[in-house]
Image 1 (cartoon, one colour):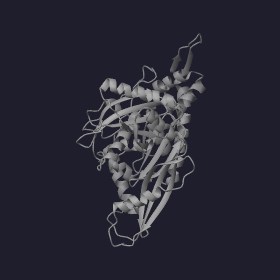
Image 2 (cartoon, one colour; image 1 turned 135 degrees about the vertical axis):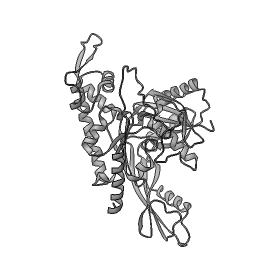
Image 3 (tube, helix red, strand yellow; image 1 turned 90 degrees about the vertical axis):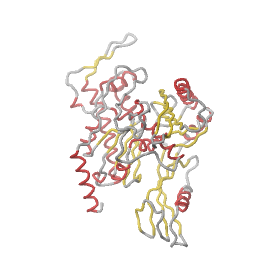
Image 4 (cartoon, one colour; image 1 turned 180 degrees about the vertical axis):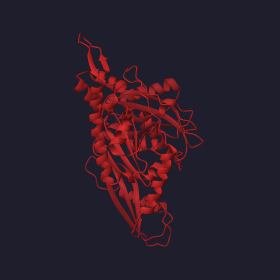
Length: 443
């Protein structure tokens, strides 16, 4: 396993164990993966250690039996949920030899000082992420190495886990007889998998719709500028359908996937969904229109929260030239792109893992596996001086891989079409025009 990378995505809806390696072209080969429905995880937090250990063990055993890969010793594990908080921290050093060039060691010192932030009892610092630097009152510098200066200031985003979920996760890994290589924030992993460098530079909102929560990160000028966690996800919508239609949770999930839309005006007026009765109960009929209305109400609420967070960062959302990129299992709701674009006025696309080799299973190039693939990519970045190939103009091995949405929990007859993102020449020229305007106006 020395040349392999292993990661575990502990999601509210599903657990994914995944094995990959970096190929000689700087891409990621996904060698094997296994998925199972989650038990013991709620809103991204590990609550029942034994249940989680059992689920993860099953996925690892399945990888071993189907691929022959064994001897896994170290894993990267994703963390997310409402127990995560973000704090900005500012540290500085005075350089007596200010005529010498700033070195990476000095940047490491700033970062180390930022990690000394006082946290509450039971809390743990997960990541310290550089934002921008200042040198002698010159602000908004992203790479100070190689410059001259006396007073060097670093602005950092400190990500803190404010509960005991992290310790629960560590215990799970220990009981699997594995070594925890690193805990990685799942929205960061998803962004690593689905965003290009151009998107991060020109400004983009990355939205990862999971089962328990919807995580958001705003990138601008290649820096994470704002983050938020919205306490609604795919499971929330399923529960809304269950309550609104008075059906079982299983049936609610099935009809959401198979027939759901988030724009009620775009579904047929007279189409009816027939749900067979069980245990002597009569069958039920639900209209497409009623189902879509329930889904639309919740999605609109999520969009409103996203807009609030975007406007917290900027009063001009058009400053984020690359719009919004949705990923995660929840992003597969029909007409999501159209509704978000209508409500926000921003360009919208559905993001799936980039820079995955053509030898990888086609199924993993799908929004539902963005976090799992991103964990492997982040692990590869940590173990290599050169990040996984991430040029903005690159393609996925000269061809697109068609999405396949796998059934889960024995749900059958699912047929959701993921529309490909198509960027016509007109939109491209408009983007170039906006970039030139931004430079002119010094936005």
